[in-house]
Each structure stands twice: as C-alpha cells, then as structure tokens.
Image (cartoon, rainbow, N blue to C red; front, side):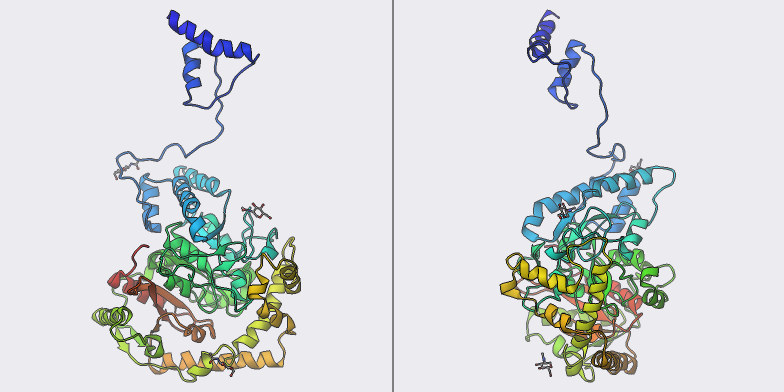
Length: 545
Ligand SMILES: *[C@@H]1O[C@H](CO)[C@@H](O)[C@H](O)[C@H]1NC(C)=O
Ligand SMILES: *[C@@H]1O[C@H](CO)[C@@H](O)[C@H](O)[C@H]1NC(C)=O
Ligand SMILES: *[C@@H]1O[C@H](CO)[C@@H](O)[C@H](O)[C@H]1NC(C)=O
C-alpha cells in the first residue's frame, strides 16, 4: 500500500504540481488510465467517437472473407451479424490507401463514407430495418457522375475542380434511396476521351494514368470507365458505376476481367452526368459477377423526371421483379446466338484465345444454345467507321450543346462553357499535357453550330445504318444476341444505343484478360443478362489478379 501511494505521488501528483495543471486528458486503454485508478483519483469520461460500431460481431461466425466478396455475400454477413457496413467501408478505404498509389483507380474517397456506413448499420439494427436493397453497400462511381456531397465531380479534368453540382445525378439519388454508401470517385479517361485522340485511355490530370491490376495489361486498362473497372478487379470495392457510349464500360470490363453492363441508353437516367450525347450516353454497372451487376442495375434503372423522355420510353424494358429474376443457370437453353466471326474472333490458329473461344462455343451448345456462325453486318465497313457512319458529325455537335448545358447548370464552376474549358487547358498546358495530347476534338466540337442540315442528315444516316445493320441481322437470323470480343464492333452497337454485356472469358498466354460481349437491340437487356449469367455459371472464367 505504501509503495502504491509513493508511486502515485511520484507520478501524477508531482506531475500536476510541476506543470501547475488543473487536469490532464488521455484516451482509454492508455497507461494513464491505470495510474488514475491506482490513486483513486476522480475521472470523467466523455464519448467522442467510434472506431467501429459497437455490437454486431458474431463470435460464433468465421471472419468475413473480404476478397472477391459479392453483394449477396455482404448482405448475408450483414444479416447474420458477422460484418458491419462500417467494417466493410473501412476495409475498402484501407485497400484503396494501400493499392491506389500503384493503380490510380480512385481520384477521391468520400470523407463521409464511414458516417453513411454507421447510419446504415444503425438502421439495420433498429426496428425500421434496412431502407433499401443496397443498404450499407459501398459503391464507387465514375468521376463524371454528379454527387452533391464533399466529393468533386470533374470528369478527370482540372477545369472542373471546385465546381458545385446542383444535385445528385439521377442514378446517385436512386443509390442513396436504396441505402448505398458512395465510397468515392473513380478515375477515368479525361472528358470520356472526347478532348483528344492522342490522350491515352485511362489517363486524366486528376487521376494520373490508371493501371490494371493484371501486370500484362499495365498502363493500358482501356477506357473510358477505367478506374471503375480497375477498382472492382483489384477488390477495392465490389461494385462500381461507369458510363458508356461506344465501349466505355464494356472495353475496360473485358480488359480487366470484370463484368460490365452497358444498358440500352435511357434505361438508366443520364441526368447529372457529364455528357457526350444525350441520345446515346448510358450509365451502367461493373462488378465481378453478373449477379452483382444485375443487382446494381436493378437499383439504378428506371424513370427520372430530369431525363424524362428517354427514361420513360425505356422503363418498359425493366422486367417485373427486376433483372435479378432472370438469373438462371439454364439461361442459354433455346437461345439463338450469332457469332460475328470475322474479324472479331480471328485469332492466330493454335492461340490460347482461339482454343478458349472454341471451348466456350462448345459449352454454349452443350447448354442448349443454337449458334449461327460466320455472320457479318451489311454495310459493315461504313457502320464501323466512325466518320462515314455519321457518328463523328453528330457527336461533335451534340457534345458542344450538352456539355455547355451541363456547365451552365452548375451552381458554381471555374468553367461555364466548352470555350472556357478550351481556354483553361491553354492556360494550364503542363498539368493538362497540352503539348503531348492537344485538344483537337474540343476544337472541332467548338466549331459546330448546333444541329443543322449536315447533323440532321447524319442522324438519319445513323438510324438507317442501325436499321440495315443490327436490326436486319437480328431479325433475319432470329437472334437473341450477337457475340463478339473487344473490338470496334462496339461502333455497330453505339450507333443505335444498343445494350451490351461483357463477361470475363479467359486470359492470353501472357496473362492479358479478354472478355466476351453479348449485344442485342434496344430493350434486350434482360435477355442479354440471362445469357451472360448462364455463360458465366458454365465457364467460371474470372481469375483474380
Ligand atoms: C450468429 O451466428 C450463428 C451461426 O451462423 C447464427 O445461428 C446466429 O443467429 C448468429 N447470431 C446473431 C446474433 O446474429
Ligand atoms: C475537392 O477538391 C478540393 C479542391 O478544390 C479539395 O480541397 C477537396 O479535398 C476535394 N474533395 C475531396 C473529397 O477530395
Ligand atoms: C473512315 O472513312 C474515312 C472517310 O472515308 C477514311 O478517310 C478513313 O480512312 C476511314 N477509316 C478507317 C479506319 O477505315
């Protein structure tokens, strides 16, 4: 006892006297706590925060396996108490901190993500229960998708840094209504690669050069939704959102061995998206499984009064009970699939790609699909050429109109028009790498003068080509989908705003992932998802990096 009293005097009492303190402060579990207890000194403790939510962890449960976690797996773990949303978000934030310096997949993390996760955890444990299907599920979104929170929305460009968006994008509103946690902003090809042809895909001044977690792919992750694909592939998150016009979801998905759904344009709202073309832009999910991508599509698809015309027209494409209801391992049975063999599956004889696809086609037949091989589009050369198809004429004019409208409606912004952005780039040649990449697409777009005779003729041409191309082929051969690998066949699908689903299909001998694409006419999203799911279940091709 005497020894204790002496220790106290030499410790705390001497310290207080020497420094003439009124009190001293410490956090729990420090040795000061023990000293205070020893002396029987008064102590007041005040709660100041949480490192993780109290409760939940179920001791009888195996620890949650974060790697390759699926949305359904996360939801099950939330339910049985083996995982909280807070723990999950913390894990992903740690992964981003550790891996993003190498991958450049994420531009910003949401400073409020952990708070949103705690709120979801509290909701789940309260009488009210989860507010929606995605309650507590973290989602990473492309930097061109507006979020009205602490995150910047910049399309990868410094010219938009500090701009304030008027509201959440339509798809973000749906995510928040379903309880999702916005984890952060994914890197991308700056301005959806619509500034300059010279700029590499996956590069932006804000995000740097995105890198695939597959070493053989490295600095060529494809674009423009590169960060959304890389992050999912590298397990920085389970699901993400990208945007697409001609291959911006499907190409990085295939290149980084994840699933990408490019929905029919208008199936998901484009309000609050940094645009290229309101007729053709689309927002879609990326995930490691078709099931997760379909689950996310179920959350974001549907009518939005701020994108009324096209979301209303496409609302009928949503199956009752949602896209997830179509997930059925027998989904290939009875489907007629057209193989766009030449040149889209022209691999060197004996190559891994050739053998892999031969095996996949065999599997599809085994599962009851009918394959119609060696198909070609009529007018293929014209359709596949961005210039002759009319797409370049139309998109240059539509980009100027729609990006000007986007910039004008911002609450505040350093750039208010395409002309401002062009001037900004000239003033910041080093950061925007102007001498390397220039901005010739911007300059050509700025030259356009609205939708005049040439643009109207080009729009008509695109409609005719989509009729003579995909429509005719699908009808004549009574196809449920056409099949191709990554290539400029994507122009044939972009011309009509057609949906495409990409699924991991294999790896080259040097380890580069490749995907298979299933495409169809507007509104065939549910059929494509059904086919893609059955293909995925039968082939199970994805290998984590
Ligand atoms: C804990 O896990 C066990 C085994 O899965 C389950 O039966 C039990 O309901 C869980 N407890 C809670 C509180 O969730
Ligand atoms: C948004 O950009 C500003 C710079 O304008 C920066 O200070 C802020 O941290 C950014 N927000 C996030 C969440 O990173
Ligand atoms: C596309 O068409 C234009 C105009 O006819 C031509 O100059 C260009 O070489 C074509 N591009 C390709 C890839 O064939």
